[in-house]
Length: 152
Image (cartoon, rainbow, N blue to C red; front, side, top):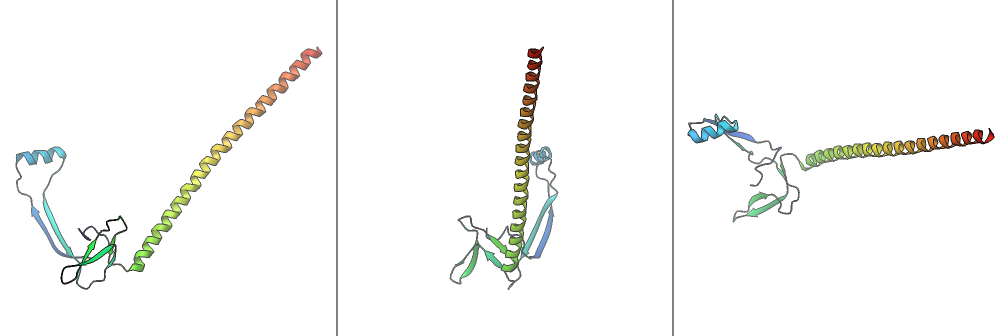
């Protein structure tokens, strides 16, 4: 476990080995064919962090064993977990850039939603206004027609 899935580490490749796949048997080959998979072999890559390389860990680090060996672990409480070869300030600046991006996106979506609500409200008000105007004109014409009939 530990920092195995961490991104952003500058690791040196120690070994990169490709082993061609041998015949796996008729059943396994048929299943792979039906799934659309054609396995040609396995590639094993080992990478390591150079000795004395600076490392920034945000999460849980604990000492274990008699020689106080450091162990990196993902926090059990779901708090953030970062393992990087960048400095803490570089990590903070990248996270603040992401925060600015998210803030800008949320503002954009908020403005778009406000525009959509506003345009819907304006259209509804305009429709009601037109209906009232039409009703007023119809009533005026009915009164005028009734006045002409009464005067004739």
